[in-house]
Length: 308
Image (tube, rainbow, N blue to C red; front, side, top):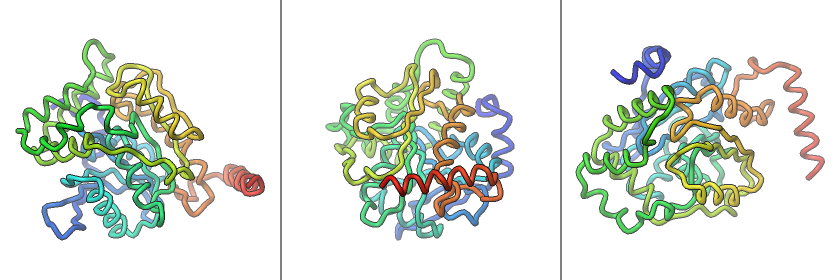
């Protein structure tokens, strides 16, 4: 199987972290699948949201590394939701079910767009403390598919898979990127027609992020300098939308840097989460943070408060 090639850690991940299935809607067919690893005493974990082609497994390298450093990490896979309001309502119910008040969200591509829309949707009673947006976008019109978005539900699975595969890198890539693409193709094959059609609908139906509703969130924008499905214009739009965001640039990594450049991605995630150490929104077990780092963080928080 292709998935074994990507990393020996994948088999370890599958054998040590149990996959949970949770229903929070009245409709029993809507099942959230997730991996929840790390200390359960942490009430503000980091949650990973996959792209159109992804499942909860695609972030296995982040789950293994971050939990090893003491973080609580949840990687999930969405049920079939056909509109953004329905998704946001379902995700809010999931957080309630898991007894999580606020969370940090890492979203890749569609996952990043959904993370922004959820933060926007809950801005009056905030559930999102920070965002890491990887190869993501803020306006679905960049895909020029808004007119066809309402017809994805009619298309057979093989046609939907062809649409998604059209965005995968073509031409020569390095071995790690080739393995990442193979892994994602394998994950794509595991999705049924309803899962794919609903995700493509969310990805392409006419919608955009309203930045004034989430302007106070800590944001890191993570993107790559080589070929990806995201246009230069879409990246520039993200920078304009979040002028104060931290930028995490990867020289290479394609569409799936969390798989093929996991060490760099994990480091950027750690840097992003470090700003919350010593606060009630820390995603890490305090025992794993040095006293020196906590002192530095506390003085930084005091200085920030004095500046306001």
